[in-house]
Amino acid sequence: MNYVTVKTQCETEVVIERSRFITLVAPCPTEESARAILLARKKEHPFATHNCYAFIAEKGNSTRFSDDGEPGGTAGAPIMEALKRAGLTDTIVIVTRYFGGIKLGAGGLTRAYAKCASDGIKAADVKKYELSKKIELDIAYEDYNVYLKMKCDDLKTVDTAFSDKVKITAYVKSEAISRFSALFTETFFGRYTFKELNEEYFSFG
Image 1: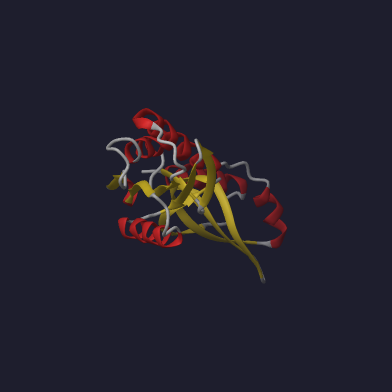
Image 2: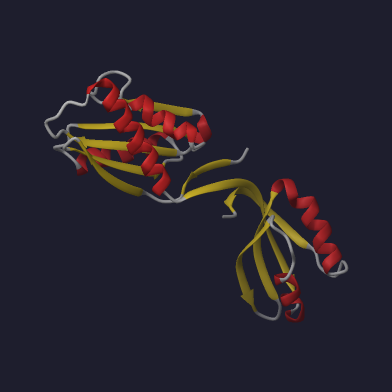
């Protein structure tokens, strides 16, 4: 199963009818990490009127949202909807509100929280992670440029070490490992093999 999440924390801010809305979008692989981020946010903004949030963690197996004192259904639900619409998992969105004295009404609040969540997600560095095989291979110096010119969108080199040979560490999408193996064998006429290591999620973006 592949999934989409955010790479790093991102913060946006907007003022709507004198209320200040600060949106935090952050990666949270587990429910525990989501709760830690929420706790830290509340400590960072101790005088905020509300800290409304939604998160989808553990590859979609853990979901929570909260209106944090706003009228029921006006904050947590639209934030969660923004997360789902973006196809994100392992992500938390917290919208911190400082009340500015003008009541927005249920419809106004729903639109405000939906906009804040959507804008925050759009500003975030979104990455797709795909189940991949980590591989290692050794090739001769004279073949290194040949390797670099290989046309393979399913391959991403992450480390290259130069000693008596060129030692390469890379990721190949799991579903493409057979195609890559055939291309690799054909390119180097069977002179080299590669070692398959662990399988993990990796972003090719």
